[in-house]
Each structure stands twice: as structure tokens, then as C-alpha cells.
Image (tube, rainbow, N blue to C red; front, side, top):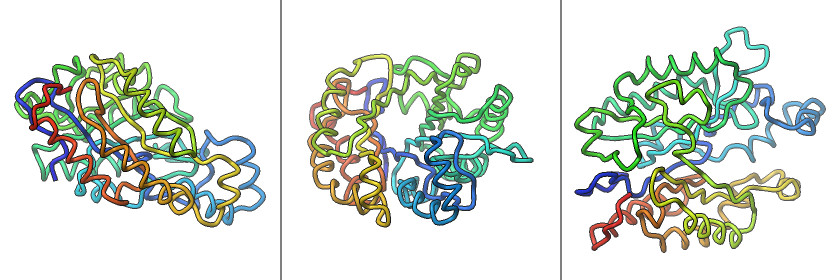
Length: 305
């Protein structure tokens, strides 16, 4: 399914579907704990070992579909978090969320294979967290992006100048957002502030919806893209209560009806939603619902950012 509505005006990216912690479909239980984890988690794993990691995985994996499956389903925005691995002799870069996931190079190549087969599709890659990375690691990642995507990457310009027609004419298919000062030194890296993603940090669906609505109200009308994270975040007490069940069963599935009701009532545009991300994007009718939001523009909307 198409993920973006095509309009006659510039900046016609109206409503994109995205996945939260997009890479977490694969989390390696044999890997060490990520360097961003607090000492309490590190100590927990050091005492309970593999059992602790299996329990962690139930709460760290927010997706079940790999990149190819997500793309095939219509996901076009990817939330990416990158880390080095302690004492890794190969000095590789990995996706990471508490535990380590796949190698970054493999994930980028998987996405590129889809783009090669679908030359009019466009993806947003949002590199928003970096762990244990020095300058040379960033240089390595930038080179990896060059080698993988080359001229498919759109140089950073004003957000309101980006339209599908513009990208098709230039044969660009990838917008890379990079939440690091490194972005200022590389023409094809869009600064992180052009992809704000306010985080509710709550387990309460009502508080989440209030936060999402307030964030949209305060959203700058020009100059950037904007993410609405329809995501609930477990507290330590939540994890303890549902330790064997995991995030999907304990929180996401139970809260899904309320969250989806909010999504259905949204409108795309400068004063509305732009990119919506969720956990377990295959649940319910998340993807089809977001696609339908684009049709509002065909019904008289003149607000197309």
C-alpha cells in the first residue's frame, strides 16, 4: 500500500506510518547488555544471566516484523538506535535497545533491497540515539550510508520544499535524520531537530492521548517534520507485575482500542499529525487506519505539510 498521499502542492508528505524501535524484531539474547542500561539492570543480568535476558527481551522487543515485512506492510519511517558492542574485536555497529540487535550494515542493505525494487518509494531513517560511539564510529556510519544508498539520499533542505514530485525528479528515496552535531558536517544528513518526537513516558492510555493532543497543538507549523509516538512505556512496577508476559500482552494489546480511537480522529497537515509511530505495527488496523487519514486531503483539506 502507498504510505504517502500525493498532492499538487510542495511538502506533500502528509501522514506516514512508522515503527518504534524498528529493529527490535531481532534481539540477541546471547549479547551483552547495552551500554545505556543502568547499573541495576547490569547487575540483574550478571546475577541471573540468560534467564534475565529472556525476560528482558519480552519487554525490549517492540516489533515482530523484520524491515522487509514492515516495508511491505507500508511502514516508511524507521526509529533507529545505534551502539558499539563492548570488547567487540570487529568494531561493528549494531542496532540496540537494552540488548543488541542486528548489525547496522545488514539492516541498511535490507531496506535498500526494497527500495531498488520499488523506485518510487521513500523512507525516513531516524538515527536518534547513539551509545558508546566515538568520532570514528560516526565516520564509519556515515560512510556506510554513502556506500549503501549513494545518490538515493536527499540532501538536507527546508522541509516545506520536499515533495514526492521533487524526490522522484531527483531520484531520491531516503531521508536520513541524524541526532548528533555530525549532521552539520554532512550534506545528506538532516539535523535531528527537524524530526522532533516528543515522548509521553507513561503507562496510562488517557495520559498518553492528552500528551499527544497537547503536542500537536504546540507543534511548529513550519520548518520540520513531526512524530506522534502512540507508545506506552512500562514502569519498573509494570514489568515486575507482568514479568513473564511482556510488553505486548501486558500493555500494548490492552491499550490498543483507546490508542487506535485517537488515531482515527486525527487529520494530517500543518496543524495536525504528520508521522505516527507505534509498537507492534501489525496489531489491529494501525497501518490501514493511518493510510486512510491521507484521504482527508482529497476531501477538501488545503493543509499539506
